[in-house]
Structures are given as C-alpha cells and as structure tokens.
Length: 251
Image (tube, rainbow, N blue to C red; front, side):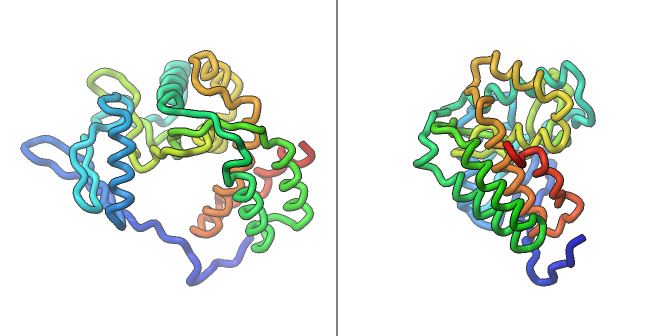
C-alpha cells in the first residue's frame, strides 16, 4: 500500500533482559538515557507497593530493574479478566488525576499535526484530513482529566500471577504520567476491547474513577491519529489502517 521508507524509519532504542541471582529472577530494562530510566522509577514509586506493577528493585543510570512476575500472560478476555482490568484502570486513573481546561493543553494542535502528516504521506486524503480536524474541534470538551495512564494495554502485557491470581501490568515502560486519561482504553479498543466496550466503560465509571466517557470519542480520535502516524514511521504497515478513521467522519 505504501512504499518502504528507507532511511526514515523510527527505531526503538531499548533492550530487555532477564537475570537470575541466587535463584531469584529479575527483569532488567535498559534504556537509551538516564532520564527515561528515572521517569520509570518515579512513576513506579508513585504506586508504591501496588500489586498492579512489578516491584521496583533499583534504577542505576539508564537501567531499571524490577521483580519478575511469575504467571500466565493473558491471551483472551473473559468476565473475570475484564473485571480485573477494570479495577486496574480504576486504580491507575484514580492516582493524582485532575481536571484541566482543554485550552491550556496541546491535544487539539497535536491532533491537527498528526492528521496533517497522515495526509502528507498519503494515508488520508486532504478532504478526510479537513473533515477530521473539524470533527476534533466539535468533539473536544472544555475540560479533560489528566494523570496516569497505562498506554500499551495489549493482552500480552498483563500477567495473572501464579501465586495469588492478581493481575499485573508487566511492561513498566507503559505506565506514564501527565497523560490524557482514557488513552490506554482507546488503544485497548483498537486491539481487543471493542466487543466489551460498553460494559467496560460502564463498570469503570461505577468505580468512581475519573469519568471521561462524555468526550471519549475525542480521546479515541486523538489516539488513532497519533498511533497511526507512529506505525507508519516505524514501518509497521499492517497497523496503518485508514478505515480506523471512518467512524469519526461526520460526527
């Protein structure tokens, strides 16, 4: 569909290893600089002894070590797993979240930038770009929730611990602060959550977590635009799907 972009591919620059010391396993995340490692350390420490993330062992320069979680990765979602993920996101979104005026945030401009790029490289037509920009402005609320999000909730990043059955999000790089809350749920909808979407959102709202449902369409559009651009630039073409934007046209 698109020509391969030799010399322009964005490359992920981190390494992951598992080490065993005295019979105990640890996960070792090696990042490209100490700033990123320090951010992961800070974000894990914000959740303290929470069972939802592997325990922090140490951060040294550009490395983060965490406890290895022995368990079974999720491969499909049933009622029990769905409720565990609802509770997980309720805990994540409930940590230091706050409402902020949209006018004070960059999300509309970022949406425009991402849509413009997708039009420039041929993923979207110019007419589609203009329509989606207008849709974004209609969907954007006056105020949004900002805080922690788990931004890569693909099923393989969730483990059911063997010892006590708790759900643990093992990709610690995906815990991020100062996010547009709901972004992780939007990605889950693209990958696996769509059949459970209404039930998931209703149950999440029932936990008392920040309620972003009234403007979730904006969150989804912002996510799909950014995610599609990233997939294009990392040359993961099977994920570059212009049809993901179809449901937003005319809203």
